[in-house]
Image (tube, rainbow, N blue to C red; front, top):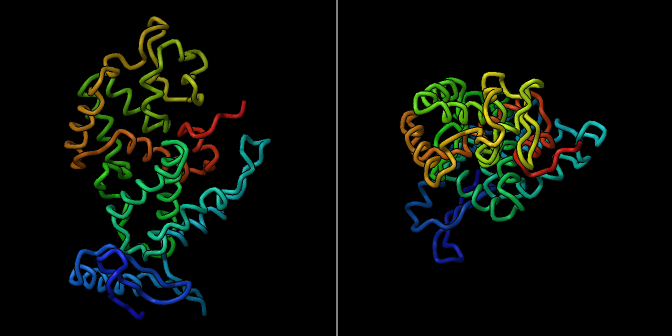
Length: 303
């Protein structure tokens, strides 16, 4: 692929690789050396991520992965609890992000962190941004498994903003270590990882929000969850008692996450990364993006 390194409009340097629909690039490099270094890696990544199917060739990018995944999802009818908004339509602004045109081999956790920052600013709620990231992570996993199995997962490494997607072993470790910190911590981490519920909604819940007999947890202003029975409160607990006692005080969750992130060797791990992990798992298990938006608190559940 033709690679060009040239001065950018902002006083820095930019790289352009290829031309037309398969071309991509990046600007904002502080000097020519940094731009040339990235250009070399990007050119190699483009060759590594060029996929051939019969006589057709296309570049393996986040945008291509997300487009195929969204089409496969299809539209969930209102009769089945959906919105009848096609996932491809809902995800189009994300698809148009420049980072989604990069070869997957050069897409880094730093790129994903910057992308998340832009999308959080553009979307109406943190839950909508989290659901969008879950869709991207699920799409990349499916695409890599099918077309580029040798590539590392950019969501698998902790990013500068404290986000990543934990693997199954790390989820089990997180639940175990959280339980050693306190009973409430163990319940919080297990609830998030098994249900995908927002941390803030769980912290706001009281024992009275649980229907022990039905095995359900009715989050205030949120979805109805069906968690494992051992994560529901004791039937004898006061309905007004917090579901997660001792975790509502300022700074408690942040301090606990610092300890958990350190134990998992993912320093800076954010509590919302646990929810992201659960949402990705739910999508991989067949749930629809509309259902994930409800779980993330971005859509009201249809009753």
